[in-house]
Image 1: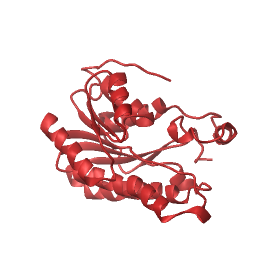
Image 2: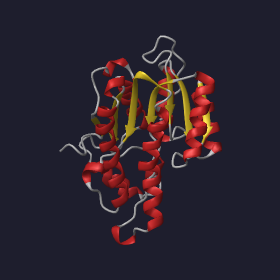
Image 3: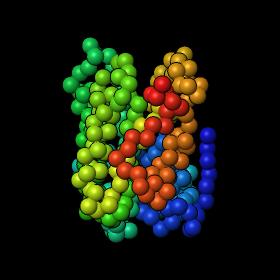
Image 4: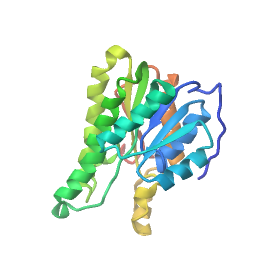
Length: 252
């Protein structure tokens, strides 16, 4: 579902500066659109320049794209140097970048482990750590988790563990950043119509939909709406939570 929105100078995020990693496709792109529509200026990252260029065109304004890999610390330094030089500070950080690969335990390799943990765990940690000098007191940090961190899904050993680590980060950082009034929360999606589902056979995707109490795959914009809530003052007394956006899949 394509959603085109215009900048709103009186929106819920008016005047805020946001960073969204993994912002060139899927949930990150949908959230970037929503953030801009609510008045924020957004920096997005991604590993592929072509997708970043397309995302900037789709968002339409109040956005800067910085190519980079969150598992590469030099790329993160370059991202935050860009934020600092262009805007001076940061109000909202959405550490969304992540990857998943369907690999059975018997087929897990060191390369697979390093790749998943490098992006989903190392990448999330240093995305937040390196943002701290720019992140203003009272800011919001949002992490992308997954129902996989709670469900123990087959053939997803390393991915499941990586998302459980992300949930743990939110608990710890809620404590560590409380003196600065920085709120840290996790969005844990269920099956969402994003590129991670594209390699799967249609019957397997249909099986996911059948396992969801609401009976369907979610849309990326349904994640974006929740991200706006957690980034805005609407959630001013919400921190340390894992908010499942999964159609009930991990709840019943």
